[in-house]
Image (cartoon, rainbow, N blue to C red):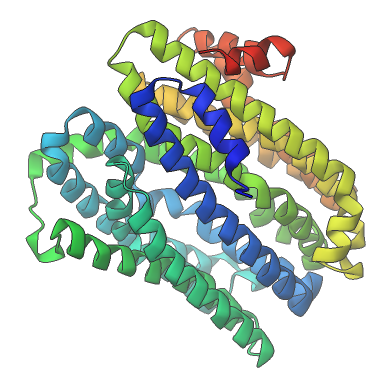
Length: 449
């Protein structure tokens, strides 16, 4: 039995046009298949890491990875969605776009690495030991290779980069288990996560050399193209920083608000919740090029595709959230063990942020196609500020469950309520409101041609 069949069938209904249906199904199959393989292995290795480190050291690991993630948008330079958009709209200039993106990401990776390590030196926080921060952030120096992977995706060639990145993932997963077996400690485990990103980029580059005859020595620095792309991507960088702050700031600031043990409990709960993120990310990534193409067609097709995407992603994530809420006690027991039994309330609150994150992914695609990237900046930093304030108020008194409530409340704002407050995005808010509940009308809307 093909476990991807339900997702494939739903996407086929979302995009009934025969020319795009095949591309969507192919994209979802490979992307979701990749995420399912990663999910299965990550659950196994993640459980080993959680049990091996224990709540206190696991809290330190979570703080380090969250801290590194804050600087990810600088290393990424926000160009991934623009590569997809521009390659779809102007395939004759795809190489110029990719070259410009590589130069921007190379610069961003160096800046992010230096900034992250320098800040750790002045943080005066034992959990952010500079040596460990170097291990967590060295991957930024290789982020420019991700532009090549996005190039493949923009050309609807998901298979090749996925195979390359899977090889890296499998190797580093085995290495992680080996490091745990030989009891090499926190630093060694942390290194395997960074190594996965580095090797994945290298393997995708090797794949591009084979199929596209692409070499780094053939890069052409087009000053005009780089500047143009940077001007457009600057709002996305700022938006990404804001998004990562509000998504990760809870774990970053919790070392100052509570104990490493409490952070470890909260991290175990969020880990079980975040395991499901592959579903909306896979679907939205596969749909992004097709939504971009619909923009050049009639407004009716474009709006209908947006709404169907929202209905689909809401239906799936609400079912996942309800399922996780119900099996929470069993999930924590099997995944983390009895040491983490107090993580249940935090998990049952945090999982309901999934539908709002999922809607935000589709809204982000819409904003890029409407060239409203600047709208994202103010709202994400507003959300980050909201999350910080809520954590400061709730974590000292309520611990892990307080952090979960802070996250849930904050996540409802950028991809949903913020759209109501801005006249430029109010249109997408009403579409979201129509799509948010799995009503019979919405289910019928998905199924109709």
